Amino acid sequence: MAEEGGTDLHGIDRCLEANPPDAGSRIFGSTLGDNESEGKMNVAIELPEDIARQLSSSWGDMPRRALEAVALEGYRSRALSRGQVGRLLGLNFWETEAFLKEKQAYLPYADSELAQDRASLDSALGA
View (cartoon, rainbow, N blue to C red):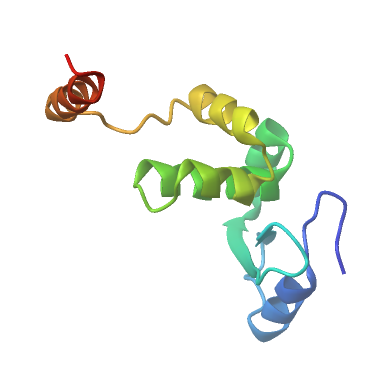
């Protein structure tokens, strides 16, 4: 069963049956993956009700925001590539670039890497 926005709650429902949340908690879930033929993983997050209410009023779509947080942390830690972030969030190349820029998710670029890139470019150009 899928809700609007692609959130698949079937796996979350099974998880909740096996591990019911504490009283006063709310479960948010999101599906990782980009199409029906690809393997997917459901992720559920249990939050205290007051925090869930506060975040929902500020953020709106909690499953989407949780998915974006996973994508951003994965990118910042170099666990995910830019392309994987786009695939995870269903964005094209330019939408992914805009998303990462908006979230200030820049990969570190050391002076030594710049020097190496300049040397490679100079070599390729025959300079």
